[in-house]
Image (cartoon, helix red, strand yellow):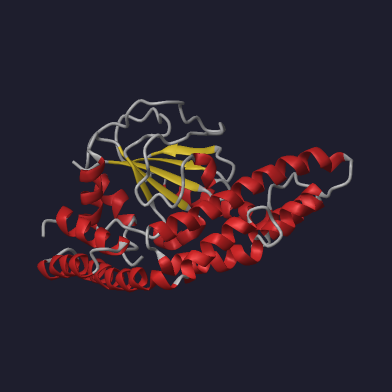
Length: 248
Length: 67
């Protein structure tokens, strides 16, 4: 399902048997349950009422619970709910008036500032209050995207960071978040980032091997080697940590 | 980065596992909107600190185990 939906659907895995975060991370690495976008935690954000696992809760684009069920028996219902939500994510809720729907769709196309500004500029009238509410919602989503860019840079995920940086630089021009985006984009092109990028590339190569062949002796050796060669970089430290966790 | 894919395995593999989700916070009832701010940093967190940060995309929250 993760492969099918990619970045359009957020997957959040909650470890529910009391395993420590470190052991969970090790388990995830060993099982190759790693994804560019899936997030893991040991912290349940809510109760499900379920007595066993696996268990799955599907949240709509506004956080509404759509399904609370076993993911195996409810597989078809989950897929149908996701498809409907993906359509909604593109077009916006049916009850939206034309200006609100356009703002929503513009945001989806990456025109973040234009979308938010159009809502703020709505004249007094029936749409004004709903427009303000939607503008606040989209502001929050734009901020989450900027936070994600900061995280990607910190995590040495430069390939994704480059793409998101370009997208945000264009889409948030003229918005209050523009300065923050410029600062982050500037850090991505800084000369002193070259060793970090080189290390990230080396780690990426080993990770690809792990996805293909699993965690074997050769992969552990390579992880250790990346960790030693790029010891002063974020990716190097990540490689060393992975090697240590996986038993090198 | 590169360690992508294979998440679908989680559902299949965790079907073999037992266990219960920890009781914590609000009950996820169909039709209700959920909000939650995470206390701990998320793994591969993508800058996410709350469920609200995920708004605009559908979210699949899967409860699984390592035993």
